[in-house]
Length: 558
Image 1 (cartoon, helix red, strand yellow):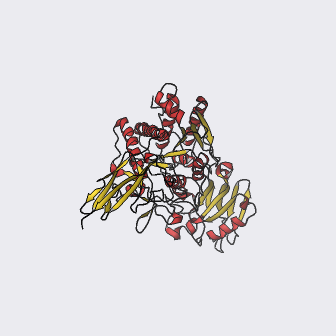
Image 2 (image 1 turned 90 degrees about the vertical axis):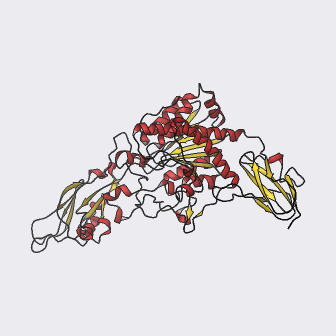
């Protein structure tokens, strides 16, 4: 049974849905509260009193007034008006009556208005009653030397439009934990989505995935095996505040809602550019380490925040594997572009120096698992993720400094993939539902990958071509194997151990290197698969254990 999601959902509805699932299936599911509540779907209320056009000259007489309280907690109730007294030689003054701030502007001997924006701002900020409820500043960093004009009473606004069922308070992000045995004794798989708020279809993938596991459990033997033998963690929306803002205020919102801009960019006309890109706010390969693909600008779409893990959202994700250390596999759902990727996800420029690449065995494991997952995605309606869009992020897309996949791979030793589903952020509902179903197929196959990993007790096998013997000239020796492995080898006659040389890739997207043997040499080696099973049961740590492979090449020619 599939096709359980049937419409787009904001973070409030997504959270309610996983709570309902846990209540309906308490024997195999529970809700986990992530430790850090978000900032919340909330903003300070503000008004721009003056012109925003005409460049710095036209903006020189403009004043921004911002509430100290959040808009929903009283800021939206404040009014501000600038009055022309209509008489000569009047002084600038501020009067506060309840929630209304009245600024009476100064005039010169002719009765013309003479208060500059800088003077009005100082008067408001110095008034004991006004500065209890608002603060004031110039528009876009202007010096404020222009003359302020009279303005009718204007109500401050937080410019937020979500319906009443969407709370403005800090949001409790929740995770669904699925499994017959939810005690850390089974290998864990993490699926998470909507780090980027505008990617509306991505939480449909994870929600459809969770629904399939729970609603098929009682009558589908394959699902039962997965749920019984694994522990599955699902976070439909990492960026709840951004989700709400994207749904109800600005569809293209990518980031969260925290504003780190100074007064030069804190007027409400800049509100759609505020926020931190959650997927640039982690701890590995970051902007702070010199990697490319994140910005220090508070209005950039890839703003990494003021520091690593400055945001509650990224701190929540990092907490998950730190708390549930049985997690071995993870999938991050993004859109768009039909990519399927893994680490390294960042590089330095110039030189395109990436984070350390996976070993040959690890890379092969990524590829082999990916083939399985992509095959299942294709089953839904024939969607093909092309080889050109499959591989390490830094190779097939771009550098994404400080992304979550790199944190999971390098800091937590988790096999972590990234989907980039579809070709747009908010496709028509029918298309979004197709994407949810096809990529939920992929997530179910990831569980099969994890289950096979858990059951793997078989030692790998490897061999070399050509075999040892007499040769009259240099020999190019190549390796082959039964499954993705890391090969450790020696050429000096010593026992191979985990400290021996590893067989490496010949290059990016190429196979294994070959060894050139041009003098009589004994090659000794063993293979280790990704589960840690060692070829022939060889124990490299036992000094007299000799179940490694060995071939001798006797070179007789020049």
